[in-house]
Amino acid sequence: MADDRVVAEIVSDFFLNTCQLCRRLNKDVFAVLIYSSFIVSRVAATDRPNKLNVIPLTTGSVAE
Image (cartoon, rainbow, N blue to C red; front, top):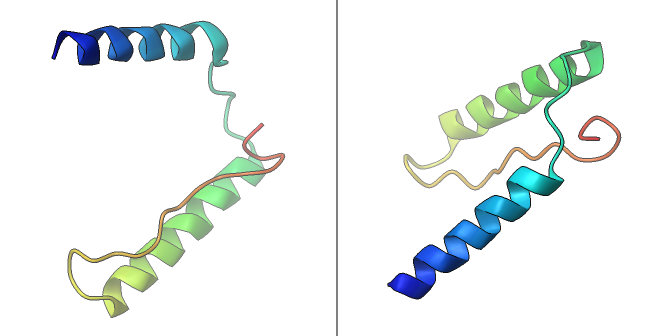
């Protein structure tokens, strides 16, 4: 258990020291948020409950 806490602290420090703060929303980011939420809600309506097979992931220049 102690090893898990050490690893979690190392990973947390890595993310805090290497990741940038989020940018302000622009129209491209806003569009991605809208479309990904639309896809997730549409799949959730047709998929079995609690078995959602979609992970919304922002990639490419919008994620940068």
